[in-house]
Length: 260
Image (spheres, rainbow, N blue to C red):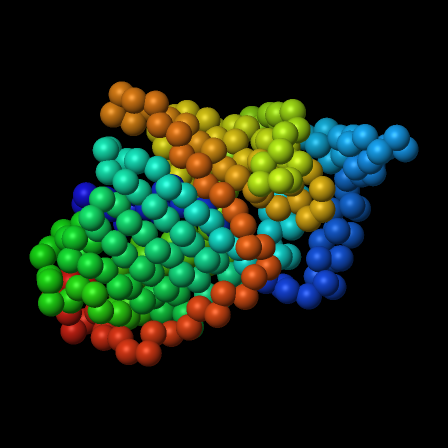
């Protein structure tokens, strides 16, 4: 449980909300890739030319589309070492919120105005800080960028950080097209992204085969304690304004019993 926060960062990952930016990304992607209609003259579904591009081009297009959309939700639910794990992260360029649970430990993290705010229950405090501090539980605690805890809690929340954890590593291969979340997708497979923290295994990112070419799902597999585990992260709510705000009341971490 000491690695509760680190584990959650490893498994999770993360708008310009008008029509104009979406047209911009379409133009950017189309400048380097060729597309065909998704329907032929007989009305049968055909495979977009995008799905036949290299894995590198598909992931590059996906990251461009994701940045232009500007915000999204990533979510995951699985079992880690016999404990139920769930994560939901709403990411945008400058603000974000992540809700986490592992076993009986629960934590909410917000990033607003360059400050991290955490609301941990007693079990999460013990897991993330290695100390017992029940009086600091279930309160919003402000962690400034100058604090030693800032970097690890800030990771995997904002758009740039979440997107850095998506692209597979190594030699990239593509899959046949399939359907996920009612979307035609093409998979890009490689080694797990280094930020996922998996020692080996594989990672496949399924990207929408039609515009906008955003990531739809990430599937990573690895052996954990001798057992094959599969981790699935879904991406939704592209371009949504999440209205993440500074907590109405918070206490500085320097006034708590938590390690500084």
